[in-house]
Amino acid sequence: MNQTRIVTSTDEESQYVFSKLLEYNASHVPNGRYEEVKLCVKNAQDEIVAGLNGAIKWNWMEVNILWVDRDHRRQGYGQQLLAEAERIAREQQCTMIKLHTFSFQAPEFYPKLGYRVFATVDNAPTGHQYYYFMKELT
Image (tube, rainbow, N blue to C red; front, top):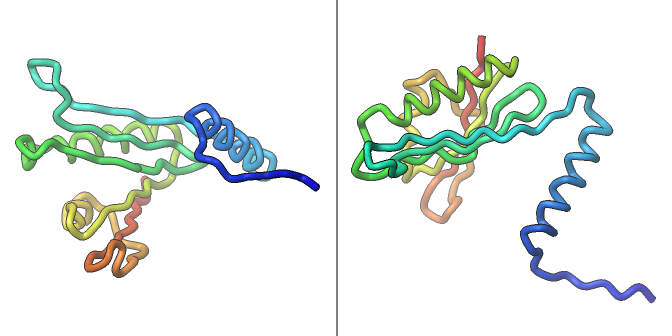
């Protein structure tokens, strides 16, 4: 009898699982790619005041994190980061950008920049909504 168990993965084990999924995907989709996109805004003291983490996958970019420090909001850093992400996406011949956010974050921010909601999940977390946005790149 095969003895298996579920355990919490180490960082290395998690990376192994991720690489195996990429390998599998690449066997089914031509020109498969996964390239991380990591951007940040630093102040004069070299402190990070805003950042964007994402990845290019096949023909799109997916923004996983867009964050601006509370004391630096409404100064255009989020818009600048998304503009740079869009520039990179176009340069890499992506046809769209996808991202997600919660109702308690800034869902009203993205439509101003040309993003549209394509899905919403209610009560995720309870009492809030989870939004999926996309923007087609031309």
